[in-house]
Image (tube, rainbow, N blue to C red):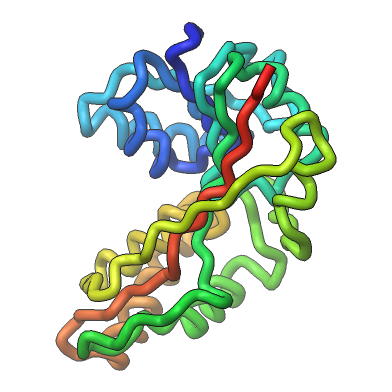
Amino acid sequence: MGAAGSSMPGCGPGVLTIRLAHRFEAVVGLDPDAAILAEGREAAHERSIANVRWVQAVAEDLPGAAPGPYRLVTFGQSFHWTDEARVAEAVYDILQVGGALALIFHTVDGRPVPPNPGPPPIPHDEIKTLVKKYLGSTRRAGQGVARVQTHRFEDVLRRTRFGAPRSVFAPGIPDLLRDSESVLSGYLSMSSSAPHLFGDRVEDFAGEVRELLTVRSPEGIFWDWPGDTEVVLARKQS
């Protein structure tokens, strides 16, 4: 991997990986779950994206699993699943000087909520209840278990060689509308509710979600405001 690359440990089905791939000569998507990587590989193939190398490993396997060097390493709502300080130090080692670690996630708490454009909001709480009905109350992360974040990433990074990071916000789209199938596919694209986790019950789950969405919006249109996008940026200075 050349220095023009980007690495995405915990890439899941490649949502962020595929969106950023055109900005780099080469990209590594890293995740411990083979089935999720297969979904990412197929999604990249459908979009004729050929510069991604998919690696089955956990972030704690860095640098050995994908040595680099890299211009950018990203975690899209996945950093809290890792041994954070250890992984941050490993990322520091594989970044080129001036390269960056970017932790990308949605932030709702403390952010101004835009006015509802009309359609009902996505019934996230009820869909999450259905996910628990099928998969249990322990939130999954591929074949493992997702950790619950109870602290600030900034505090973790400040204690590493990165030092104090900075946060930037991108306002969430205030009037984003999605149809029922888009809402369902959004949940199935998450590593915590990916299709393979349901086994042969995935169609049963999908059917119940569709029934719920029909009740909540007979027109099949929902307002989606996932919050603002927060990016915690830390650079390797030397």
